Amino acid sequence: MNAPKCDAIDYINFLVASPRAVSGMEAARVQPERPDAPAHDAFTRLLHRLEPDPGTLWAEAAEQVRRDRGVLVLDDSTLDKPYARQIGLLTRHWSGKHRRVVQGINLLTLLWTDGEALIPCDYRLYEKAVDKLSKNDHFRAMLATARERGFAPECVVFDSWYASLENLKAIRGHGWRWVTQLKANRTVNPDGTGNRPLGECALAEGGTRVHLQGYGVILVFLIVLPNGDKEYWATNDLGMGDLARRKYAEFAWGIEVYHRGLKQHCGVERAEVRAARAQRNHIACAIRHRRIHSNDLPGLWRDHAHLAGEHVDALGVAQRCFFQM
Image 1 (cartoon, helix red, strand yellow):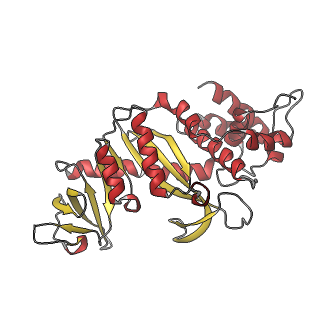
Image 2 (tube, rainbow, N blue to C red):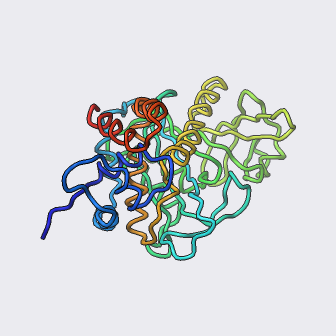
Image 3 (tube, one colour):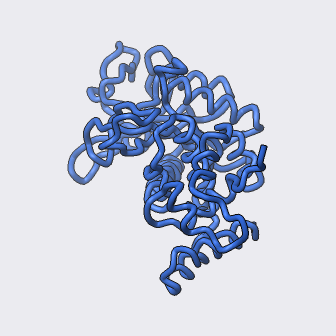
């Protein structure tokens, strides 16, 4: 049996330098000149051969995070596949970008940030028809894995979709603080007179203690937006001030920046493959590329590619950048 002519690093280098189509044909076309260069079939076989494993990402990210500080942010994003019919992992999800339910692949991400660096540490792909796991199951599984890896973050931040009682109790069970938003219809008891929707309670911008039904006492901040809409931020840290709450909310926005960069610069949505395994491996390589992007290394190849105007030249620079890490 012949040895493979390309590996994951070759494919990641291609993603780093490729602003266009992401396919085996394109990857083979832009390879630097060398004897016995890989053909398009080599890249296709690579995506079917690799074993999809988020642990590979963690092995590369572990040295870049401070496990005893920083914030863990969890959120999901839909990778658009509007014209797909036969692609694996395809499901329908709400898209914040399109403001409606769309067809695509749902990616759940665990991100570590200190307010500057954005380091993806873990991820999951939603495929409930196969693994029987919901998004909330993946949410708790990633947090449990983070605990096993020795994380002791300042807090865990996530949006209201993941603010179920089971998730909140799971984070409390790890001994961590959490910060999230709650819907206006969440039932709380603010003054001992009985439970009622959060939207009907008198809350202070600086924080009000209420009893969340089924959980316990939490601190809720009422935020009135310029357009009159209201947001209800909550935490299990009863001593948290509004400045700290604002800081963690700003940190949480980093995952939106991360997902946007993953789509715009890493080709995560553009793989021309159908099999679920191949999609998983392409997405894994794109995420590993994004980890490099967070270190600003692609600035080197991006400038070079712009000056040279050649895709092939950019690939050569990308390879040098990767191995200088």
